[in-house]
Image 1 (cartoon, rainbow, N blue to C red):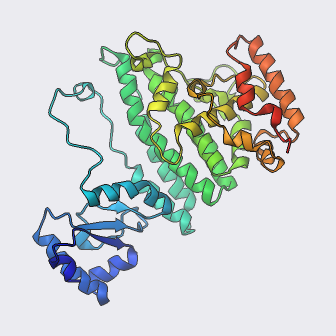
Image 2 (cartoon, helix red, strand yellow):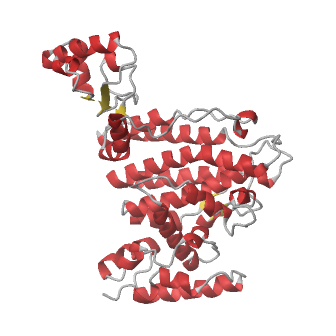
Image 3 (cartoon, helix red, strand yellow):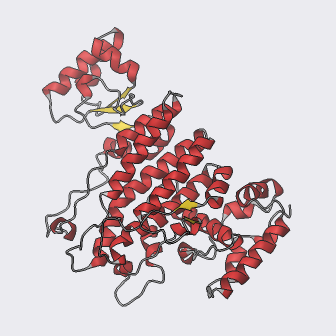
Amino acid sequence: MEKMVTDESVTHVLIFSDSEYAAKADSRKSGVGTESQIISHEIYSKVKQSKFIPIVCEFDESGEPCLPAFLNSRIWIDFSSPEAANQNWEKLIRVLYGKPTHEKPTLGKPPAYVTMDVTAPASPAVAKFRALEQAILKGKRGLKRYRQDFLDTCYLYADALRIRERPDVENMGERVLQDCGKLKLVRDHIVDWVLLESEVDPSEEFGEALIATLERLLELKSRPPQVNPWQEVWFEAHRVFVYETFLYIVAALLKADAFDILHLLFTSHYLLPESEAHGTNRFVNFDAFYGYSQTLQVLAPEGRKLLAPAAELIKQQADRIDIPFTDIIQAELLVLMMALITDGTRWYPQTLLYASYDDAMPFFLKATQHRHFVKLAQITGVSAADELRKAVRAGYQRMNVMGELWLTESFWERMNMNALDTL
């Protein structure tokens, strides 16, 4: 214990802390207490020390890390779950080798978003998610309250970024780009939640909560009721955000094998927000989550024009290790299939424009085997491959009649239609 302080060859000490360790350290009990006395003196006397690195293995009910008092002011690394450990492993290695992820930049002109009158609140949803995670993993009572508290916080964060008065900007594309970057945080919060609940316990209650969340996303992409007059471009960032988040939710459910939840998602009717409802038509299909952008042409290289600016942004923002951009492309291929077999529904698969010829779609390829086709049947509600092929062909005719001439045989091939359920 003393050697880790006095031996110069010991460059770092990792302190793995959970609730039990923190309690023993604070009460100075047993070996942990002795160890704490030795370490705490070193930490308190050398404010800038970076030798002792707290590794958080557990969060308390309020979402705070379980750490001894003498470590509360230290920067810690989250290893509270296998997913968190996987996500933060590189961060730990970089700390140990003194190679930070971000180098300090040279001082230059302030970026546009600093001088613009646009503010984004810090996300309080991180602590809310930790509390929800502990409630789910430990089977705590009041799960519905933890979940709703977290989702409300996500909604309020995204709602605070909605434009409610004419923006004072010279380039609206830059404003949309900046807001999409801020909204990515909410995208990741929602995806983390979907992965957590769908992998641990994809219950009926979770399915209903997901549908309610998607309806709130429809509200976020619409005009706030009190805004009048307005321009459609004011809400473009949130429309792209909802489109992106919907694709990530589909990809997350595929990853978690939550096929019944996917069927619910694609077959539900979603209540429109007040500002979007017209006449007696108050419900929409899943294609209401589609979004596109013209202002995001600011992402195009000089002298060129993007075919799908929203997909370009999604590609640039696809920084999750657990759900790479190829998973998003595959998710949108599934959405396209569901649009083809669902009457009155249309979908233009923008991210598929970024799929290379050799990109495999494993979910569809595996469906060549009957045991994997059954999973696709769960999602589509079509139990026979021949019936599914017939329905997709009918969708081709319907969409082409509606002027969707972009629909090509390559999508049929990517969905592995000819080989489905042949083994």
